[in-house]
Image 1 (tube, rainbow, N blue to C red):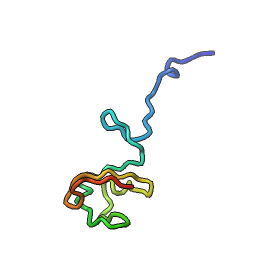
Image 2 (tube, helix red, strand yellow):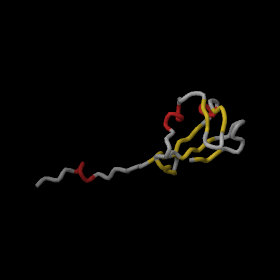
Image 3 (cartoon, rainbow, N blue to C red):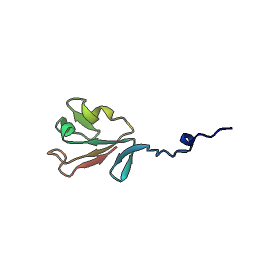
Length: 80
């Protein structure tokens, strides 16, 4: 039996998005200035964008959205 050293290497597994020292769930979608420029309105049932570009195209029903500060989101927004 032969054991190869490569088989013993430890690889870090990241199940989401790593930013600095923090790892976020794969369901987290960060919306920045480019996406916020496309935000037309925030309704009781959701958000309306004028186009699906950037991170907007990654939004699903399971997404957790982290949204920056803009005219329509003066305090930022955290939503599902």
